[in-house]
Amino acid sequence: MAHVFTFQSQQFRQQDERPNPINPIAGEGLLKWLTSQLEQRGFACDPPDAEDWGWYTSVTHAERVYLLGASGEWSEPGSATEWTVQLELNRSLWDRVRGRNTMQVGDSVSAAIEQSLVANPEVAGLEVARSA
View 1 (cartoon, rainbow, N blue to C red):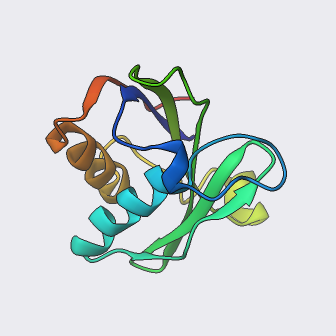
View 2 (cartoon, helix red, strand yellow):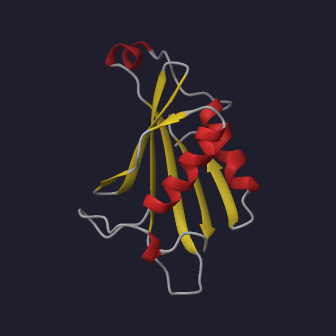
């Protein structure tokens, strides 16, 4: 079960981000900001890297490893970009077969992401889906 966060923001600018070498999809700047927020709360994060659907990083907490992804398409200058952030817990095949080690509604990494987004005055229209 992934947790998906969608929102609009003008905070992250195209000129501040490396071009995604695979597809022209934004997300590096958002992940850099988000990982700095998570690191301040004690989570370990890897540097963001490009993927064909956007940008991703790994987040580690309490021996659990998560995939954190972000994507957005640049909008017209002066208008907000629509962003999608997805968090998914890495689970072994055995965990998947047995239905164990699932990500719960109150997951600490997910809660920290939501708190960071809610506290950011540049974020508007935040919606969170915890059963995607």
